[in-house]
Amino acid sequence: MKNTIQTFISFVFSTLALAGCSKTENKMIKTNQQSLSRKRAVSQIAISQSNTAESSKNKRSPFSRITNTQKAANCLIEDRHVPQSLNNVTTLKKTALMQLWSSYWEHHANYQKSTRVLANLQNDLDKIQQQKVDIDNKRIQSERALERAQQSLQHTTTQENQALALYEQQKKQCIEKSLQELEARTSVEEQGKQFKEKLEEIRNFVTNKMEYIASASALSNSVTLQKESCHEAINNMNDILSIENQFKKYLVEHKKSEDTLKNAGDQFNAYLETLGDREQEVRIAQEDVRKMKNTCTKHEGTLNSIKERMKEIDNSLRNEEIHNNSIKPDYERDRSLFKRYIKDELDSFSDSDTESRSSYEEIAINLSDSDEEV
Image (cartoon, rainbow, N blue to C red; front, side):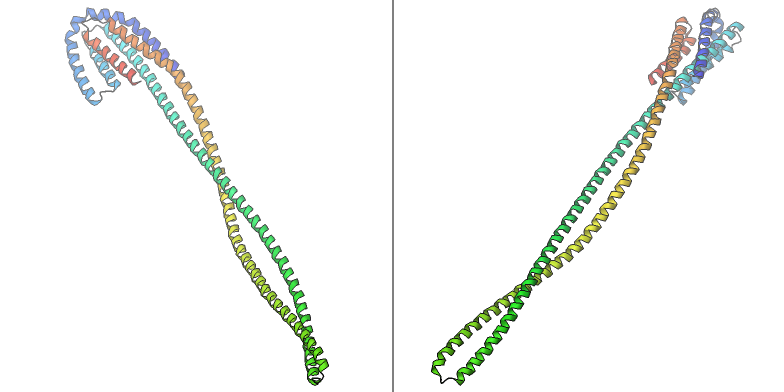
């Protein structure tokens, strides 16, 4: 800001000096126009050659036209036929003009530099905002993956609890059924044992009866009674055989129950193996959840650093805009004053003073080109 104020003060003094010298110089140039015609012709040839050489090097450089104008001014100042007062006025005017021109291009360069810095900062801000959007999307994806993993873990835990409850229920039912079958088997075994004892008694009784019948076959009256007793014993034997058949059927059913219980045990062992696989899946899911949490923590740290960087860029943008706004009025004012000065100088020249007019017209064209570039 201090440099801008100093430049503006020098610009004001230069403008005042140029305004005071322009009329005196025009009068002295008109009075000495004839004596300068020969030297101006030579200078014009030198300027044309110099312009051709310089334009071939850099056609768009505004400083090449400044160099050509300075050479033309030097050619006029070095003329021996020009009075000393005209030399002093021309030198003063040339010095003020070059100071004004340097001040203008200094403001112009500062303005363009500030504009480029502002554009670069805006691009950096756009990139940072895009990175922030990408990080937010990744964070959302991680949160969704974490939520899905938690749901999968909860679902697996629910299935595990249900399977354990079902296993406990089946185990309880199998134990109750086995106890009932064991009790029934014990009761049937006792009944079979009693029937066997009774059958043995009946067999002994039949044997005794048969022996008695054989020994007492002569007794006809007792034969009928013995036959009835035999028929009764035979009926008792049939009952015992029927009980034995029932006991055999019970043994078959009990064997089927044992097979069923064995199948249930095999199924339970298979379920235990499946439960081990599910425990492995649960551990894998828990590890995925832990990794997702670590990823979310990393994303949060990156997002915080990006937010800090965005704050720094916002502060830089505000400072750059403040600086740009502070130098822009000086730049606009200097450019308008310089254009007005060039226009006044062109209006003050006569029609015959083509050399000086061409130099100022060249400066005006250069100024217009710089305005178009801005």
